[in-house]
Length: 160
Image (tube, rainbow, N blue to C red; front, side, top):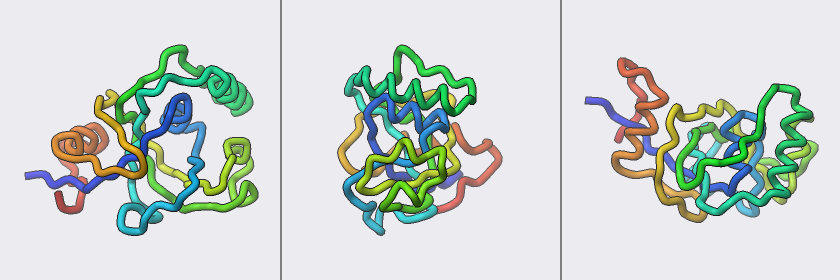
């Protein structure tokens, strides 16, 4: 029987959830630090796209940074909403733009930046309700996330 690591999620508005899922944005601006019991450096966090519709000024900003990045990423006209779209590993929390890699500095608004690494998009977004703050992904949804990310023969590790 497979065991599945516990998972917490962070809900973001679009287009920010898309920018993280696409690997373009690796810093998430927050006004609070993650609670050590829920997330610390090395914790895998699910990225959840809120149901709130995208602000088109934000979309224009993301489109500009996507062009600057020169990676051929095209910002979609329609975004996924109300679903987990990726997982990322929390690398740490920074308190200033200068602590970020140069390509991440334009994403900074502070006061705190959760630095993310190893972003892994899900093949198929998983519909679910989000919450404010960090929230536990529960039940079958945890299994569905890990099953998309881990090969069938691999042990995702940790207790259920």
